[in-house]
Amino acid sequence: MENKIDYSKNIQLHIKAQNKPKEWRLGQAYFNYAYELYPRDVDTIRGTEYDCFYDDSKIPIFLYALNKQLLKIVNVKDEKRVLNIEHNENSN
Image (cartoon, rainbow, N blue to C red; front, side, top):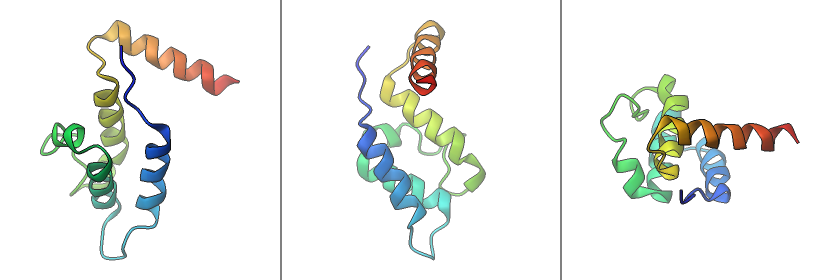
């Protein structure tokens, strides 16, 4: 499984979203900045139940869906393996 996640881009996404223009909602900022970084992957989320553009409460599920898309997880076994790896890295 290819890992397309560039963690520096993810950090950049969070920093940009937290320093968003005042007229933007937080969900709008996350969506727009994620689109700048990962346009093809964000397009797969646009208009779905994971789209946080109009609903700030969907930011966590949007980020989950984006990371899942970036990892191209195709089955539950792979997802459990990836989550286990992430858990082990966070334990150190």
